[in-house]
Image 1: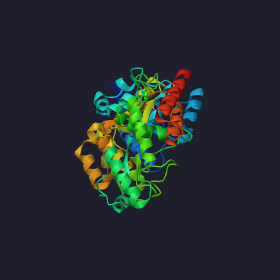
Image 2: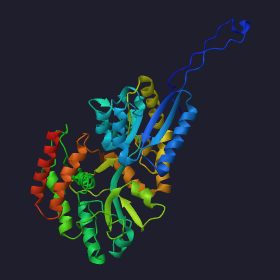
Image 3: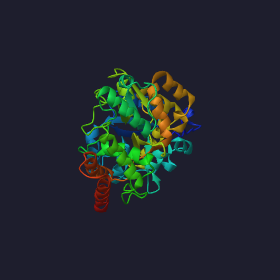
Length: 420
């Protein structure tokens, strides 16, 4: 399927031309060139480039070209290109970068440029994240979330059903105690260290915070909102797991090395491990408290269009409209293993049948898209995440109480927001 072209070439017919001789008509307009920056590599980059080639072959009036910019250099190069007035027409980057990129250059409001049926089909959490100041400044092109992965062999050694992972915090604790007693290994790995950016700890903790009924920031992102009974419930859950020996304080990576029986981890791990799994592993939805609600954290990439010119912005929107049509979303999701960003594909029989036949371990992640939350949409988020994690890791290490850690984190986060 291919939507209305950007421009319709007008063909002038002059009645006397044939009689007067071989006078040529005006040359057709050159196609609009659209440049796209992304940080994908490997299969993702190859698949994206192949889809761009397909788009170009079916659109005479637009030519899309792509450039790979390494993840670590992406924002720096964007800022440099803004200074030199050489911004790409489209930037595709991590979801949490959207607010920062909106400060680098003027982004087009895509709400009136993409067909209404395309926008309405996108997962609401993803379009909500891309809304700044009432404008749709980004749209998702990929998605992932956090679920539960576990080592079936260690489950069997503990006398647990390897095909029945825990679905609640309470079940996770009960299963964890059996695993520790039977194997001597860590039962459930937590992200306990802030590290260089804090995000590993923060975005894992947010899952349990939302499940307990809490929020990370206020609705307008003007202050911390986690120092509440829900926040205490979530952090106490982590501390209890550590105190009981089910989890340990330490560097991340024990589950992947076979030294922990389970972990909350991303949907991307299914594809990474599928060709050569380190052990027989299973997947499930993120366990939540019996008196709480299911929730997970949302990631992925979003596309933003810079207003380099009206013509280029319109052509870029045409490309994104095409990319988000069902045929392309289905092909992209099946080839890359990324989760569909549109509801019609994520819940459709064709995609779900493909998942069940080819990547059944993705099924819990696909189902979780209906309860996925996006992180706060603010350019201050990276600094907020690190400030939060640096205080919370102290409670996990037993250095401060749960209440003190949350109060200190609240002060640290509010200081970041106040500084701006």
